[in-house]
Image (cartoon, rainbow over all chains, first blue to last red; front, side, top):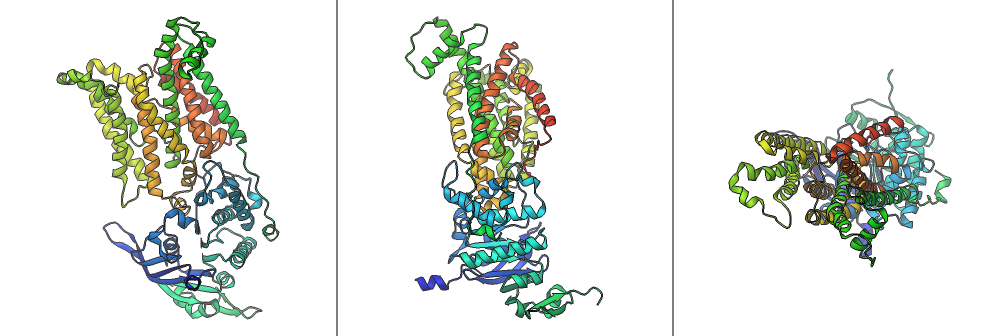
Length: 271
Length: 366
């Protein structure tokens, strides 16, 4: 039994297809057949063109969309069998955008991340307080705790959203463009913190990223979505080749090597 | 980010502090409003005697009677039902307004917004006019059901039924988008308002009664009316107070709320039904009193913040106190409809508050 649990991935999709309904009963197909396995404690970056279905795939994994065909499983059970609140105790989502309500302080917003764990009818428990403090610190947002959400810069907001997701103390963290609005220092700080959580607490992470070099530096495994299916899945050095970038993105890139021998892709506008 | 991981300081538990103070003041204000409203009137009863009568009759305290029986009758049979009705209706409307503003993420939302007012009005006016327009019904019109007239029962059923109808029309593919709900409520209200206008046109002598009901008045408050509405409002209060956390999370939007474990569509329906039950029960015994349900939540959001853990109980206390005092004013002003008083005093105060503070943000989300 123990062995089976250890081998079984935390989450997986099998032949998942999804389309958004259009007027007239037709559907705009986004994903045609996606097979993806997320081993416990793994770290994976999803890349692909705009509209390739990256966000849709995250929403299917989070259970807020139901696949038209195929199956999504979490913890060995089909997502459809999970109660929303039970799932929210184990899966957190950092959305691409979120309207923060006016008048709340950052600490109060981050405490909303505790909602699925709520035990106390009218207050918060010590465990809630500690999770909020840890999430704020892990997201580098401790200094923002007493600020009002509507007074934050774009980058500060992003750190607050990260803290809200971490306060859920998830096993699986789904991040949709987590580095959006962040300057280079905060991009590095955020992704390092996520990697530390993955290494120290066994957090399983899926991040949609646009910057291919950042994705390659961040994740040991890259999944490329193209035409509604997985076009490539593997270590960045094998996956992110100039040929693949040409094929998927239609952009010619040059290849350079970093000091450590890793590939770096560059666009040459004058070339 | 590096050092912080080692020893995460505990964020100080937020004490109720300012919010607790606001609740305490609200409770005291409510008691003061109750005493003043019961004591004042054409037959003056001393505040001490009023307190003794209330203690004896409401709390069952063994206080010997040292006052004329007429004073006790006036207070218990005439003023007390009216004052308690004002408290219940004011609290119910303010709380429902708070819930609808959060649920619809719309600062213009009030308890009536998705059809309660139009449905309750059509029901009440039908009840008022049926015996006049259809004399055959006049025999049955005097029928009292559970101590209630046809007007109250039809108003309650009209309000609740209309919202359920609006909700089912707005549902598409298992979901009820907020904008669709608002627009559907507006459209259905318009149809019912046409019915109200037609009945008013045909009403003849009864126009005055219809007008009085639409303005909202507590003059018709009775113990049986209270006995009908109070339990419904109590259930609405209790169950909504327990949902403060869900209301807070819903402010983040439907998708984010789902990520945080809320069964969003079910929760929106539950909140809508609970708030509409309270609104309809209030409207049934008072008519469509405006303003309280729109403005009290906004004023309190400025005073105690947007956290529904405080906002919901505060809206009950302050809504109740406000309508009790407004009705006292209406009585002292010679019995004008209380809706005139709430608008005449409340609206300028709200305008002053909006102007005074640059920090006023009457929007719900950034």
